[in-house]
Length: 340
Image 1 (cartoon, helix red, strand yellow):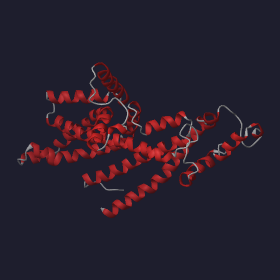
Image 2: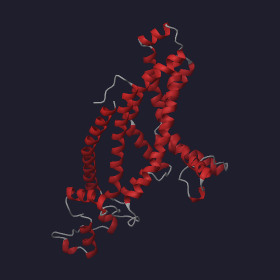
Image 3: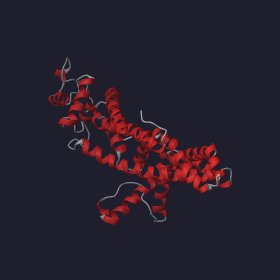
Image 4: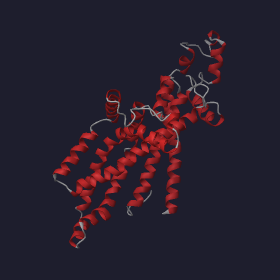
């Protein structure tokens, strides 16, 4: 298993490299056709550093265009950006007030904020989906099962960004009207948060609403997958034979059926990770968590492909990584599965 796992991961890595290159190039092409960093940085102008219009440009504009290769074709501009990641030539935004700040330290800081939000939400989604799905399967057809299914349908029907706005409005009104603020309706901890326990508590108060908004809908969706998979496992011939031999329902459910039910759950979770990531961007923006969404919106507002490209590449890499991890987890849970 160890050798096959290493070969599999190496193969997936080699396949991911050209895919990421293609995604970054396609994104650069779309951004080049849509965004105009020269206009955002220096105002409306149609001049070029070279060609028939070069003489009509001011010296400042000509130098700016040449230094950033804005008058080159798509592929040379993209290659300049790729090389600049390592040489530092494209490590700063083209436009905006953050011109003097390097891009990648900001990107990694924003990625850390988004990763914390996603990981906390995923922990809640996995735990509650398994618990609620198992509870519903063991009480299939009873009023409690009907209530669980009603919760699943209703929670999945509410978009994450809408739930985020509703929660933000509710707790903002509670804070303003009743002067009661158990959790914060946005933002991240500042210097006043202190250190140690007080800092952790402040983080919890800032992250409670974003995590709830992100996790609620997916708990409703995935709990139904777990319930359905559990019902299928409990109705298989081997489960019927196990009951006939005197194995208790509790042992059958948690020691045998649950593990089989986790295989489709893990695959669905990995396939939907792109949706979870996209929902996290919406929630991040609503609650001003200073994550990748804030960085992406700022880059689009600045018409700066150097700020937008890292977010797209990181998002694509995360989705590809989630698929590989799902395949490895499936192989661990199901001995019949083989890495190919």
